[in-house]
Image (cartoon, rainbow, N blue to C red):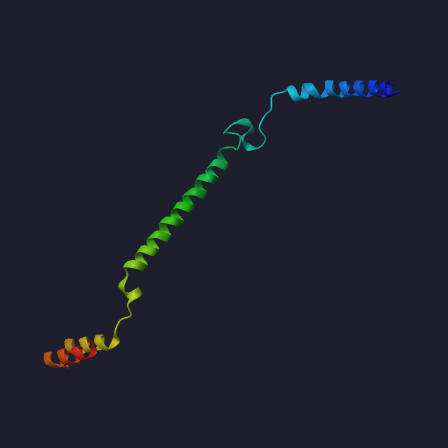
Length: 109
């Protein structure tokens, strides 16, 4: 009784396999934008990638320039001493003499 059930199962399996094998034997093609080669995405897509990388380069160069400017700018790291600045201005205007200027500068420094 068991052999009578195996025959139809094998026959149906062979029929399904006969229909599936030709499909499996076809050339496998990649899926996605590279399915037709590098020109499959079109020139606008490649131009978009170029613009994206150009903007990225501009951003990196801009950040590097900003960091360099912040590092070399003395005013950013050192606050100006207003008392010494006022003393210099008074000396430049002639309100105080050289002795007075050097004396007060020695006290402030």
